Image 1 (cartoon, rainbow, N blue to C red):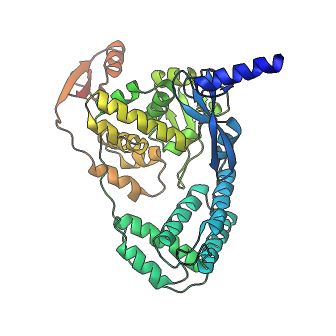
Image 2 (tube, rainbow, N blue to C red):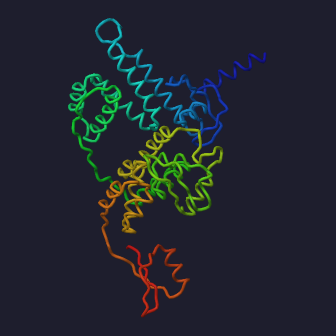
Image 3 (cartoon, rainbow, N blue to C red):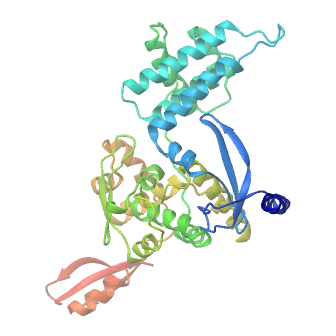
Length: 394
């Protein structure tokens, strides 16, 4: 009889959409969710779940945690690359494998392991892998430099992408002791598009708490998405936020954040040592953000909001900081750049409609406090009038 009740319950749950599962939704933290099939990934079969409250689909925790770990992520990529050995087939002879392509795929796998042993970061290895596999997919014989040159030349991509192809293949060729003369595709630095602060604030206001907090963190710290994603609760001390996991060879930084951001951060659940938790990977988080961003852009009838990426906050913050301070060295320090040439791009982004100012005077400390709270900046102290002069952009 008990078995019959279990069967009836299971059938009822399947009629609703799947077998119920006691997993907390990482998006809305509801426990009303059910199993929603499985998905095959590079690291095996993964159970998927569907939240009945917000409709968010997510995977079971062990898989997500493994993807958050750089070494495990790299291992998954290498396993996926090895599977290409069984996926590469000729289009001519009834399912026979192309031995040359198999050999090249194996060499790619060995090269990725070589990069790992040389201490290259997972993101670098992932980028190299994507470039090499894309060249191979488009018909390049990676053992023949002339074939690679031809494919790169015919690719309908930007100069920067071609430059990245050349860099990726150059490392691969050196590892195989293949002699070749790299084509000259110079990296073209482009001036990033900048939104207004109002558009950034509208986007933040339209997102759910975790995403809104993440975006506010990017806005106030100018951190890269991966740097902010790696923040731990131990990095937060009152209004001081330490960035101890810099990317791309940058320096660690320290920021004084607003009371608003402190409140938003403290409102997040503290279920892991990392502030933004282990329940979802950055890649999936970005996908959910893009979906939400499109909805906000449609709702507000503001298509420019749909162009705001995580990195846009870094460009915007650096530009505003330089315009306010006119101190490129200070901006370099806040961005963590080791090379000032990377910071100089932000001096080209200044395009404000007005350079008019509100000017105010203060004779007492109390008056100065009010002006500072209102956003006024100190200019100088007048000895003759005995007043402090402040100004704020109109």
